[in-house]
Structure formats: structure tokens, C-alpha cells
Image 1 (cartoon, rainbow, N blue to C red):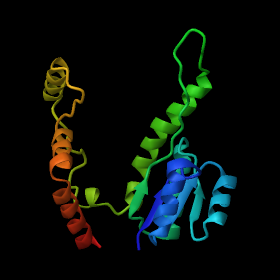
Image 2 (tube, helix red, strand yellow; image 1 turned 30 degrees about the vertical axis):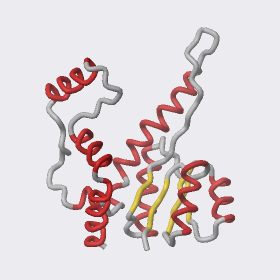
Image 3 (cartoon, rainbow, N blue to C red; image 1 turned 90 degrees about the horizontal axis):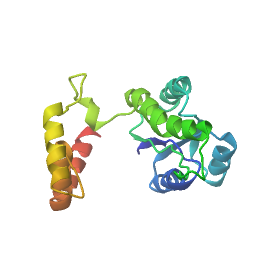
Image 4 (cartoon, rainbow, N blue to C red; image 1 turned 135 degrees about the horizontal axis):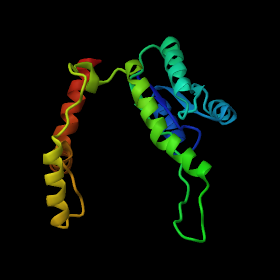
Amino acid sequence: MQTLFITGATSGIGKELARAFQRKGCTVIILGRDKTKLEKIVQENPGLHYEVLDVRDFEQVQACAKRIKEKYGTIQTLINNAGVQSLLEFSPAHTHTREELDDEIDTNLKGLIYVTEVIPPVVKTLLHRKQTREVPYAMELNRFIEETMKSLESHKSEVPIGMAKKLRFASRWMPKAIFGAMNAVEKQVN
């Protein structure tokens, strides 16, 4: 049985993913800022677990990671779903408060980075289990700029570069082979 946790699970996609994974027999820990909403979801879906977490607060993310590791041990999956979206209208008639913009950036950017930075040691992942170097693979800057400009100048609607180009090709032309290989590796790990 898989154990996973989902940030931003008090509504929308996160909430429905939690329910779907629970129906599949997974142990699901939902995370969100609003304790009342979390408690209501757990009450409506017995067997779900919750932790209160504001992803905008780095210290809270660190403390939550520690609690989760102590309570649940190894987590197989992180769904980093927390996010807010405001309707941004850029016109003289509509102005945005600094608070609105700060909340969106702090949640959607900083929160994503904080969770991604702190949580992976708690999560058993295929991606990181054999990683031997600190810095992940990256393309040289000059090559990246050259490929980007070439794509833009040829008026392409998508600009996949480096590994993204290979993954796009593979996902379109060989999805069964890719998923088969991923599932085979997953079975070896478990």
C-alpha cells in the first residue's frame, strides 16, 4: 500500500485526488492551511489523515516534514498541489494590492520551492534514489539560448528544449513503452 501526501488538498484537484487515491487503498495525508476544512474532509472521508500546513512558511514546512516522517515513516508520493489563483486584470481600471500579489507569489512560487526543498528526504523516489551528484543535469546556457531562439524564429507553437524535447517525443510516440519501463522499475523498487 502506498503512502502519499497532497498539499493544497482542502478543495478542487487536491481534494479529489485525495479521495481517488484513498479509494485505491492508499494511505493519504492531506495538507492545507485551514484546519476546519481539513477536519471536515477527514470526517466525510474516514481513513484520510491531515496535517495543517501553510506552504508559505518555511519553518512550518520543515516542522511538518519532521512530523510526517515520525508519524508515517516513508512516504512514496508527494503531490505538491498547493496554489492560489487570482484573476489578474492588467488595466488602468483595475489595480492589484501588494497583498494579493504577495500571497499568490508566496504560495505558488515560494511554497512550491519550500516543499520541494524540504520534503524529498521524507519521500522515497525513483528519481533521487541513485542520484550521485549534487547538481542535477542541466544544459549549457549557450546551447539553451541557441535552441530557444531557433524555435522562436521558426514560429513554433511549442519550444521544448533539451530533455523536454526528448520527453515530448517519447510521450507522443512511445507512451506504452515509457509507462511499461516506469512500471517495471517501480516493481523492482517495491
